[in-house]
Length: 411
Image (tube, rainbow, N blue to C red; front, side, top):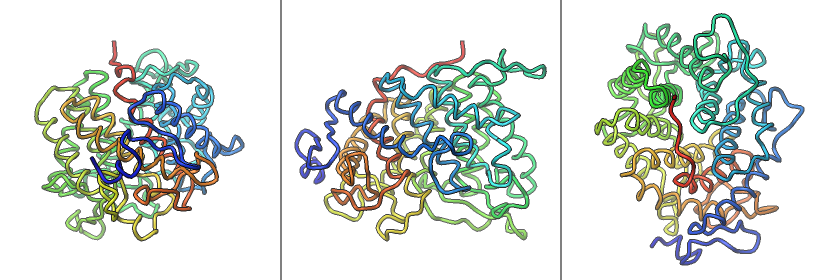
């Protein structure tokens, strides 16, 4: 039993003054805590904002709104609370763009590959859980079912965007997506993990859902490229990115590690195992999980064994708006991996239990839905925001993943 568990009680229960009540042994307690956090998250929604965005600084944080809507889809599925269904549908519909791929005109000049893929995750999650469809839009050139705005069709459209951009970008580094797809944008020369991990995960999820070998081959190709270039290290570390500027050809790697990067690849590997039953993918999933465990759990406190943290910025108090949310991605995709690869479940459950207890203890600011950043401190640290609430929601509701409906496949 960890130090943190002893601190909060033998039943993994948080129930202190101002803190969020959570007993990880009680499904109803988890659901109630998730409901409280969802209400807090939804308090950031600005109905007057552009295309269903949450109230976040403009324009670079559009991706965070995509992450928020995806979390609300998971919440709806896990708890059977349909409160937010119509708002989720409206926000996603407003952000699809004319090609139904989450490239809306209002984000022209700002959107990058990693921004787009965080909205694509919403379509993929809706696809897998049979989330209520948008009103059908037909198009003469649509080849993906009857509706060009079905969740499956939207995910395929975005996948095709990434394939096209990979081809354009393959003049350097033997492939790989750049961070930006606009050549005039700052960051055009950077091939990063969150974009390529997102493409890998998208291909893997489409492979599992559809059974189409095109997606299987692409996922394998992206993984092999990531390993070959060193973006994924020998110990399954996932590094931030590498440059192809001025002949660099990805020879120099930025070795920073962020939790959402390894999370994207971990999820992709788990979906590939589910799609193929190839034990190689199970081995890769375990390798990525072990890497995530050694890097992103423990914190700088002796009472924080098995508690998730962001080592690059949390101890120094330097996390920005983006980075405050990253742990939520890791929690979500660890949980999904445990549903897809049963041999990971015990490890994932232990890590998520401890982290959820710590996160609940940190949700004790102005109210129990006001969450702090540094969960390992054992209380609210005064650092609140949309990303902090999103991360807390995702780690808490992820405890419900194994009782959620099984993810669908294309019939």
